Image 1 (cartoon, rainbow, N blue to C red):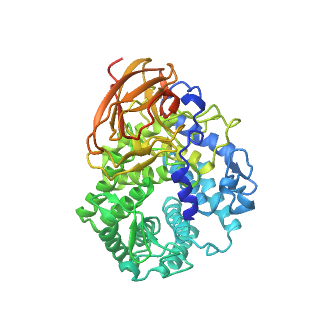
Image 2 (cartoon, rainbow, N blue to C red):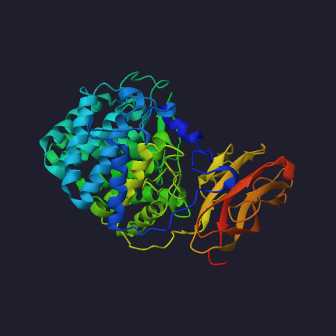
Image 3 (cartoon, one colour):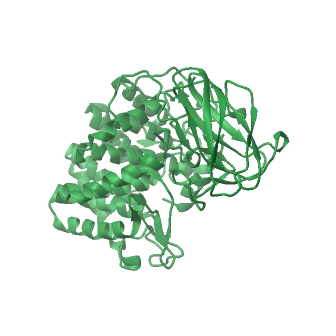
Length: 518
């Protein structure tokens, strides 16, 4: 996918993008819903009714079927989903079919494929090998689910093309783009391209018995593992003269885990399974908010979580790792509790999805919400998903506040830093089973002196918290305040308002709510 689109997700962390409204309050939450088979079915049906065009055999980009500037690319100027979004939504359809085996979603597998071929009669009319790689991988899955050789042929043809862009630059790997090959200032090699290629090659090996696919996968995996895997923390890409860049996207963790899992399935070597679990475990420990996978933005990044959770589903099914079942169910229940009145889920699984009449929803993010509900096992519980009560600040919804990881002693993967501009804020989406006043503890560093911030919660008035100086940036302290919460979803916001106190710099590490004390 285009890097400019992905980077937009890095800055698309404003309160408006997450579905919050002024003052830190959320839209009124719907009653808690059980994650049942019927809920999974209704989520899919609602999605199809809002986003599918049966005449074009294509998904609309947005729920209002209009072109919006933030993603005005590909079919009809962006009216319909672009190349790689289509592959992800096709996978969502297959998630449904794999769960139910129903004739309607089986027919939809054919229809989505036909719509793609009509929009892109030459699959090579795309500069991005990762975009094509998603279709190659999905096509192999479609063949395995249906036995239709047209899907196998498509997977083989696409993979044959993108594999020609493997070379020894940076030690190996397939180039991200099929233009500017060899030019590290205009191109790169990344997990999105190579992790997907490994998984596809091994599925084709299983489907055809052709050992050249296995050999390609083994070569790519050796390179990827050696260069990108840091004890389960997966790097994003290498470019330039060999410089690595780290973006902590959920789908990077997922695609490496899937590659390692398929290596295990193909070879039976236990170390591959260990590496697959390690990548998932890192994501669970570092890319969640109280146990729910974090909000990563809109546009492209809104679809990343479903790729990770699909890979976790494969790890459960093909790797026998049943310890992850409850993780998927909790995440699916969380978004099931936050669909809007149209039955559509949004980009932040911990917060209510805005009404479509108020804010159009993009199909990739909405499709991710549908996908997790197909992938998870229903628990039939109406309980609100509270999680652990620990909310890493770097995983919260940020408005004008950056993150860093240079000062030692933080938890998670970093902390909020450089925070001294009025109007900037961080919001923690908190879900509780019972209304009441809860203690919330913030872990912070304040080396520039006492720092004041406003604490805003939906059920109470704004109060000012003063964070006492810690003397230096590697000394961390805590401060606890009471916060009044409603049953269900709450947006707890810390905001810098210079009229309310000292605007000194503040580094914020995390927030913890004692869910049993209210």
